[in-house]
Amino acid sequence: MAEEVVLLGFWASPFAMRVKIALAEKEIDYVSREQNLFNKSSLLLEMNPVYKKVPVLIHEGKPICESLIIIQYIDEVWKHKAPLFPSDPCERAHARFWADYVDKHIFPNAQLLWARKGERQEAAKKDLIESFKALEGELGDKPYFGGESFGLIDIALIPFFNFFYAFETLGRFSMEEECPEIVAWAKRCSQRETVSKSVVLDQHKAYEFVLELMAWHGVK
View 1 (cartoon, rainbow, N blue to C red):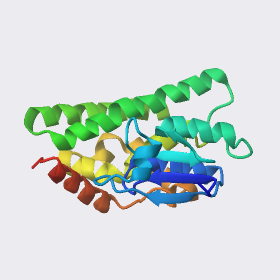
View 2: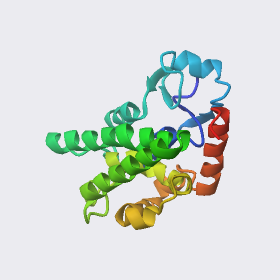
View 3: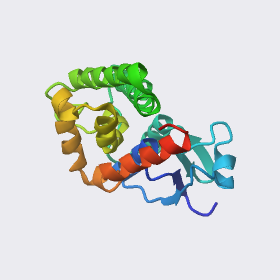
View 4: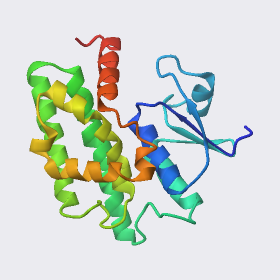
């Protein structure tokens, strides 16, 4: 593969957005190859034969899969600018814990929110709100999760800002009322150039995609 850095992604994927933000923070030039999740390319299947999903970072012809692993790879390979992880080992482990928390609590509950009805949907909504409140507690009064430094936890969570309208509409609640500090943090992050040019900040477009995804899975 001729290009040194290639990203296989999809415009609505919060996980691909994470990688775009990390690359932007490091000022790394790359080629973006948009994928069709409903008709996966031979390149995607070749580069990620196990999970067959985006994102995949291809560096010098070698694939790296899974967004948090890719972010760590980017931070270790391109050390010259904008560290994405804390330098202290304990703080680094702490950041990994909360990034993993996002993967285990925000995305799964979001999926359940728009894939379930009735009591099961209400349970997913409750768990989603509680998860955001836990993250709000971790954020505290800091501008970013890492204090003054924008880093791993921010990168892991901020792409989900694009889906706040979908959460609110399908779950019938207000993020502003439930988690005002998370909303303020998300707006603050969205002002960063590395975020604004990497995250498709169009919540209504993201909501339409969620509806399309629900229809594709037969959820009405």
